[in-house]
Amino acid sequence: MDIPANVFNEDWLIAASFLLFVVLGRALRHANWVYVREHTHVYLGAIAFASVIWLLRAGIGTTLNFHLLGMTVMTLMFGWRLALLAATVIVSIAFWHLEAGLLAIPLNTLVMGGIPILITHQLLRWSQQHLPTNIFIFIFVNGFLAAILSSVAVVLTGSLLLWWTDTFTAHYLQTYYLPFIPLLMFPEGIINGMLVAIAVVYMPQCIPAFDDARYLRKIDDDKPR
Image (spheres, rainbow, N blue to C red):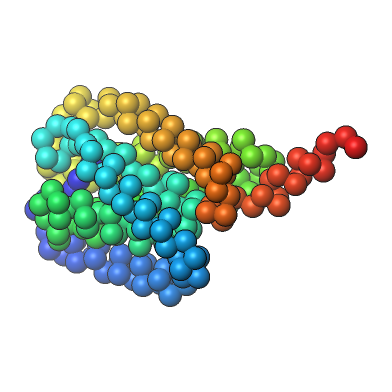
């Protein structure tokens, strides 16, 4: 969902820009730049891939549209700080290409990037503290489930903002947009879950959130000798 700049007054856009500037500035100061230097091709490739899937969209008009986010796998691979930077770049590319209004980039970055990153990061921390250290739990909860929850949260938040600004009525959103949530959340979950599974199996070094010493060696220790 794209939230155009013309539905908000200038004060709200400035507030969103200031909030993104503060959070992004803090993130950049503490980001793992060593990891980026060692995996530059992976980071840039992930941004390019996510930019493409953001441009592949369908929907109703120019505002009520559907597209995959991919922020869950980005968060697990690069951490929330670098994922937020990537989200800012991705939203900027998408809005520049679609000529959707550059003033709306900060607000859309917070909604379509910040919300999935926050949900994925918090769910990862919760699962590490309360769930068994099982590789399948990691993939299902932190990949599949986190992406589903993120997709639903983004659609509901965007719909709430569009209703609050009188861009669309609640009846219109409930009739023509919100019923499509299942068609969006399950592909989001499947794509992110599959990418997380592939990374865990073939490139575990590219997904620092997955500690093979914690998840795999425990399985080996439980095997009968």
